[in-house]
Amino acid sequence: MEELGPTFVKMGQVLSTRTDSLPAPMIESLKQLRDRVKPESIETIRTVLESQLGTDIENVFSEFDEEPIGSGSIAQVHRAVLAETGEEVALKIQRAGIEKALTADLEILAWLAREAHERLEDVKPCNLPGVVSQLKRSLLTELDFTRESNFSDIFSSRNTFKKHVFAPKVFTEFTTEKLLVTEYVKGVSPEKFSGTEEEKKLLANQGGRSLFHQIIRIGFFHADPHPGNVIITDDGRICFIDWGMVGQLTQQMRFNLADLLKAVMARDVEHIAFRGNCMGRQLTPVDISQLEIDITRALDRFGPEINARYAGRIVLELLHVFGVNGISLADDYLMLAKAIISIDQTGVSLDPEFNVAKVAAPFIRDLEKERWQPTHLLKKLYWTLSDGLGRMVELPGNIQRVLKRIENEDISLNLHHKGLDDLTDSINKSANRLVLAVIIAALIIGSSTVITTGVEPLLWGFPAIGILGYLISFVFGVWVVFDIVRGGGHK
Image (cartoon, rainbow, N blue to C red):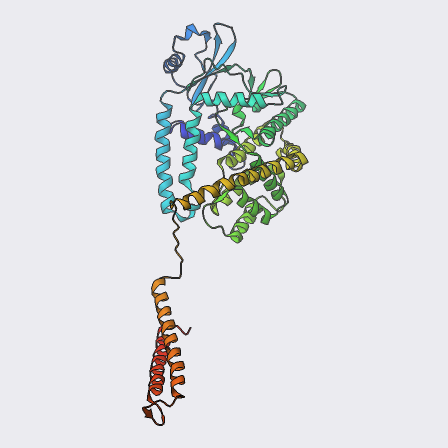
């Protein structure tokens, strides 16, 4: 995977969290991709660093360790000391030419995805080109370290667990798109932490609480909290690093998530299907019966009883089911499932009895209380009424503008009534028949009046004009009836 390039290193990092799918020796090998990827040469790194600083390294740092303390798919990290303040910092330096390498990999993946989408019927519902497109956006976004700096600052400003959980302080004056300068955090990964069992349980709980506070309370969360992105500090705190990938959930998305999890725990297939429709948009007409069958099959993979511990994997499986059935969900839901799986694996590395569902339960209950609080309902009602009243206020002005255009003959109305083709011919035929019927009626009435007068000449003892009128009326009448029957008008 190292030889194949940064995209495959990223894949290996994701696979290293799938202890449920891969054998332990392979997992241990893949874990090295988190921070032990073959580093760039120091000459190349110095060139990139000095180009971002705009000056020699010695002018900014009094110390610079050439040996990296960690190396990943996109960047590697070196320790340094600021010359001006003497503070220890970590320099995350982007690999040279990484954007070109990523773009080449992603173009190949995009071509393969398009070919598979066009040629393989079974994978069409998965929308592989869309998946690769999302992956491309995500990876290219990670190349801009100023965004990571902003995300880290956002978390720090909203973090309510500062005593136990934090993100490194960012030195924005030195940070650029290819260089991120943060405080140097001393510590070890959760898997290498050697504290007591009680300390490990406490840390696992604090990390899980922090993540679900991010997801459910503030809707802004670290999307990749695997053990390689978590540091246990020397003073027993948790530090989340690598904020290049974050997820964001609106309030309604969080409400939908709570409803989905409750339906999953209750194994309510019908409501899961309903909630899936509410959470996403339909790319194709959804067969509800087939959707419910697929949901049932997905839940059956986790046994007769739903174990809340597997919430992340269940959500991930359901997202796949929704996609296969033509329901497209926001990418942040996928990031959410991935984050839950990662924090579960990180928590288990500290505490084998760590249960992500138990940690999440209080936050979900608080979200339910927030949802049905009178203040929240009144606020929602206020905005609904405010929007409605605003539209009502605008209505007279809109009507006046329409009337003004009508008055100025600056408006036209085009009507196309389906099912009434050749309307003009139909009206003409009807009018002709109606006129002919009036003429026939007039002839019959006129002939009846004349026939009683005895006016000569006579024919068979009756006025000949009256008899002629009857004959003409008869001929016209027979012709009208024949025309109606022939044209199907009698139907």
